[in-house]
Length: 164
Ligand SMILES: Cc1cc2nc3c(=O)[nH]c(=O)nc-3n(C[C@H](O)[C@H](O)[C@H](O)COP(=O)(O)O)c2cc1C
Image (tube, rainbow, N blue to C red; front, side, top):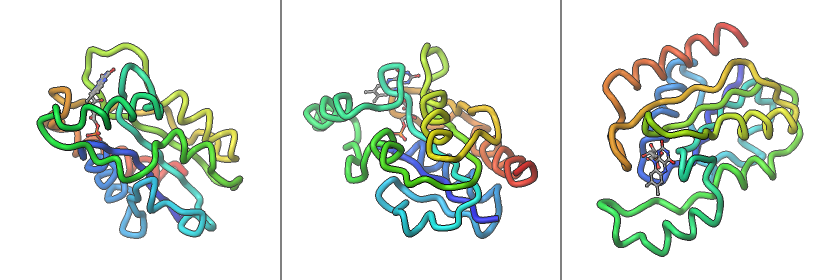
């Protein structure tokens, strides 16, 4: 099975979870940023797992990213805006035939969510859901990940590989 875990990550938490999911899926699965996950990298893919942070209660928009860009100097660490928003990547995803799965990183108390929108877009492109969306928690606005979340991500990856 060819699996790719695609992520948008400004402060690294979502990228770290993506790598743990890929490790759980197996040695051939790759975690790629939205810049790295080109149409070429997706040829023949059986499973796309896509994840983003939750910003302002939703899958990040270009407007939210613009605001973050303007305020970049005021954050404790600079945001990585070098790769496109997952929303943009999903809108351009070429049609395929495989399964999809979605995850988000977020603070626990927040309403809203990103995985519903991710799963909808994956399905539209021909990747119906293989599992329910997963939420992984951070302990503050910029992280770090809550203890145990990496292990949970890895276990979810293993479960995805078994069921798809
Ligand atoms: C500008 C901004 C807005 C955020 N909005 C929310 C939010 O609405 N709900 C939430 O649970 N967490 C929110 N968070 C926390 C992030 O979702 C969390 O830190 C996430 O893991 C960041 O992912 P990244 O490190 O991959 O960029 C926000 C963080 C920032 C910096």
